[in-house]
Image (cartoon, rainbow, N blue to C red; front, top):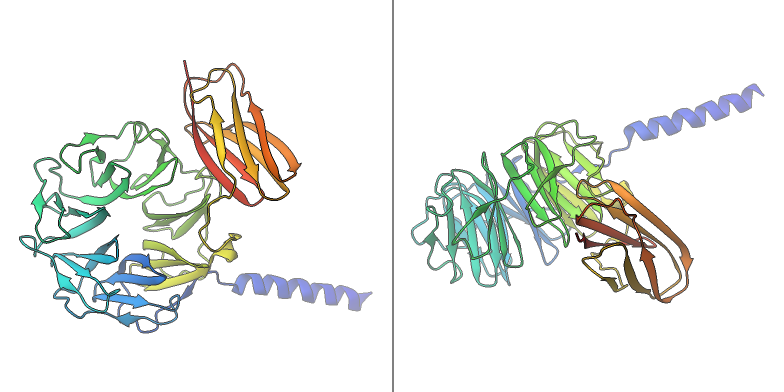
Length: 404
């Protein structure tokens, strides 16, 4: 009996030891000649890293990094955007550079902006948008050959982040909240109702929601930035610097607390820092089965998405078309969907604050076309809501409006 107890205790201690020694995040800095990483972007499975010592790329998921500085005349890079086959890189004091060959060579596209300090980049069609420190907002409609200053339209010192959704351009401004332009930066409207912190670091947009990172935590809008709701439960550091989203999983990088993960649209957060030795996370990127974190002094760290219970490596869309009618609705609405194989289906309804207010479990259903009536009750207030339809491991989010 004593031998059995000793054996069980040994197994138990081994499991504890393995758990304590297990590191989700591992450094992947081979070939990286700097520890300060400000920006990352993925193009054609190639990871680009902007650092304080030029630009690096990795073609093998971070195992090795190559410095790519041919044509670069300034070392500090803070932002990227992709414009068709081109990659655009913004520097902090040396203007903007373009590569047509996946970073092997760069050309300056500076015109009159060779000394600007770039904080953010975005692009759409043939237009490049630039947010700066101290010089406001710029755009180019000819692939960077000429630039137009829009400082008078958005006269703020820190245009920290830019994001595009259709015809909408969102600008996150340090100290002044969120602004929206629907005419390529010609006019801007402030969209900060509900924000309790106006220092915006980053913006991420999904098909139904907008997330912003601020000095006071994460806020979400499901009504095109007309109102914002805080999403900070579990965040022990609300100085949130960056964000990346995969399906319903959201990773947030903070200034002092490392990385947090939410698997429920931001309603709850849990720290995920095993192996992460630098807790100032400046940028996040997902490539294949990995997530990458660029840090302030520790270089780049990598973790497998499966380590966080996230499967389905390739970005994929749910293969079940969904229709909601009527929308807007009065008392109830009907969800029509089809699935290609037998699977379990559930439907949840969330309010603008992310609270689950209705849930319906359909159980396991056969392949084919289906519909389900959703009646959330007479006490539902008019406004925007999010419907989450889960078919097996897939989840799809749709916006629905409750009418007067």
